[in-house]
Each structure stands twice: as structure tokens, then as C-alpha cells.
Image (cartoon, rainbow, N blue to C red; front, side, top):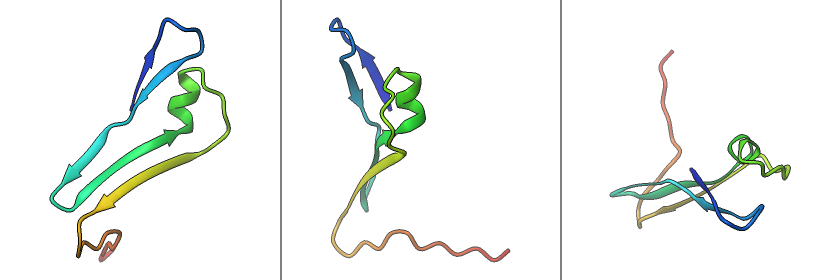
Length: 65
């Protein structure tokens, strides 16, 4: 996530990093720690956005140990 300062006090441009592949995309739209470090003190833990192409199943993980 890229947070860009502007000439206007307290106005910032938030540029999320988009991760995409043949299945679709994912991006983190809110991260409390990153925003707090940039001087944005709103209480909200984290928000994400994802989009998948048709017939894509996400979120299943298998671990043996």
C-alpha cells in the first residue's frame, strides 16, 4: 500500500497494491497499522477486496503437520 502526501494538509492519496493472476485479483484496501503510521488515526482493523473469474475457488488450504 502506497500512501502519498499532498499539498493539502491532512489529505493523502491511498494507492493499494493489486495482486492479480489468471484467477482474478486481491488488494488490501485498509490496514490500520499502515494508516496509523501515516497519521490516519481512524479505528478500523483491516479491509480487503478480491475478485475471481468464473469457476475459481479460493481459500482452501491443506496442511499435513
